[in-house]
Length: 587
Image (cartoon, one colour):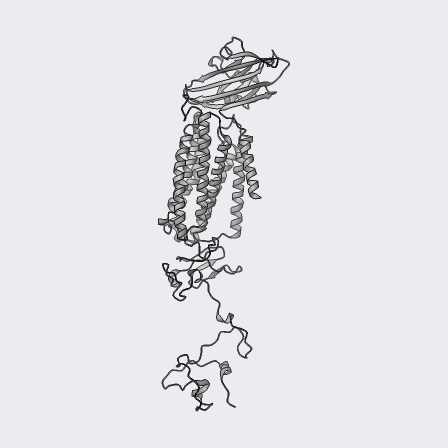
């Protein structure tokens, strides 16, 4: 049921994401407004080109194409400004060819519009096909709008009514890396292909390491989470490469494919952050399970994290305003995502602090772990903030995308190096084997001391310093640690401790109850049931011998069939008073 709901949510996200425009833009506008935003594109200096085709009824008078660029006094001064159509049009220069009148007149604005009259179903239409090239000092964002500001010649109708098709390009045709891409998207395809090759190699290496770790009984659930995160990131990259490759070939964005890739990478990111927080709290390093309340907090946090991610994608598909937002982090859900990442870092820091407080011997691992992944947590938010306030608008998306992929690669690669089998017991302190199992302490007790001096706490932590190999069932949530030196267990042998030869090592830590708990209820008079039995009398005496018939029954030296005590032999301790229950009384 949960899986079905997740699939429905993903399907809805992909559906809404498909509503965004592509670089080939084809749409019909029918609105009562006299000014409407169409799309935006970042053109290269002297190499950007726009090809268009507009069709609309002659009865609507003259409709115009308005071209704004990303400078103060241009787009920012007209979009969402409350100005009327004429005021927005007045911000443009006729002599810079920023106004294209879509009619057949011979004015300055319509001379090169490429319009002609055509008849469709008895009605006359303007059919305008043409193009423009863009020349500027640098790469610029250009915003395309349509308007009908002069209604004097067509008072019977209002608003806009037209169909259009636009194709925006950069560079020369046939250039796979530039032609169909906006300048802010350059080299994203090349970067994703390079990262895809690297991640393919990393996935193969992680599988090999997993096989080795499993053979050593160190294939913990944290490493399984890492492999899931790594695989999802790799598959997400594959989808992104497919989407950007089709875009480079045809000019039509494969938005559903791209969104699917980003969803997979978002899931990978959530799982990886969860793994880091669990490791910071000592899971699989100093404890085998988390306390109940801690687990509730972890689940609550990551459910909220997932909700923020889903909101981000739905917001981008339904409410994303290309006229204001250049990429998805410049939106309220994007800000929320940055905040969630920083909150995750605070929790990561909190977990490491308390783990080191109780397990200072793990400092050699946790200090570099903390330093590196603190940089990992902060890299993304810092780059987003720098891009928002200090980076050129035309370079933001490709820069943030490149940094996001690089940060993901560094995080995954560092963990892979950290957990390599050749250093699994030094760099990464797996202190518990996956097959070690022991009895759980009484729920009413906070901690239960073990026979070897180690302590198992009810919150799943361990205080012993050494571990041994176990051969019990594989229960990832239940671990027990026993000092191999104290128990006499040889890690390279197939036997148990010295006191329990042949016993499986997994069960050598299970303390057997005292014999009194197994004794049947006695009907004989004497001490209460369950009391410890006294040592046997004469434990230093020779073995029992048959009763000598010639000896008188009352002779204490032959009492109970025991031979006479040789001279000089030490006697055993004096038995308690109730030992006379075993004596044969003389009549």
